[in-house]
Amino acid sequence: MTKKGMLRRRFIRGLASAGFVTLAGSGLLNGCARRDSTSGAPTELAPTPTASATTAPGKVLDLPAPRTTGTLSLEETLSQRRSIRAYTAQPLALPEIAQLFWAAQGITRSWGGRTAPSAGALYPLEIYAATAEGVYHYLPAGHRAEITTEEDRREALWAAGLEQEALEQAAATFVLTAVYARTAGRYGARAERYVKLEAGHVAENLLLQAVALGLGAVVIGAFYDDDVAAALALGADEEPLYLIPVGHPAE
Image 1: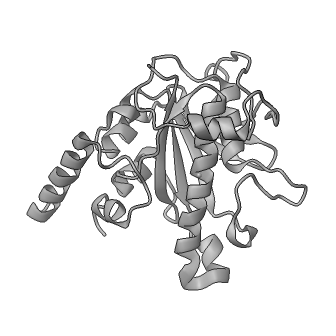
Image 2: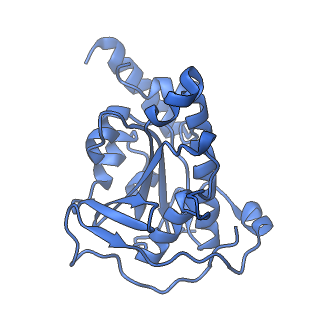
């Protein structure tokens, strides 16, 4: 690593320890974090364990059906949302992971419309959940998830995310990635802007769903893009935009 790169990494780590780099959406943070170069859902879900014994890489799971009614109002979830960075060791149940996936990118219209708006309905985002049992890649069509690996990749994401404590403690780290080409074909140079706006919509949906489930979450935009890509074996056309650790609040 060059001297400049070492100084940059040291600078970012200092910001992380001071609590200044847990908010995404800042061009400064995104720039510093590169090496080279997003209502009313259930508050109770059945404690179904995550699928580990019967899964294998490449296997596609049918997820528990999402619920569309709950006991908390939208106003209550908005008022209760906080950035939660400390979690217990309790894992997330598969229905909880499924509900968070659905809130972020679930299909809500017969023609394929989803929970979050997308420029031109082109849906350039992908979402993953890294857990102790492996990595789940959400497939909105059919509300399913592909098991991309049975390895626990959370430690790798923790290292990629400047060793922030929330990433170390989280039961699951959700990762939003972008495939800009899906939007660029129609919107050209403005595609990157539209895609990043969409990531904000999706992340907020996930955060509010976490509140409705009694979970804690925080959005993280400070990380090394290439390390996140390596941890999840992302395709060459995918760029990570957000890390969102989720767990049962320690408070």
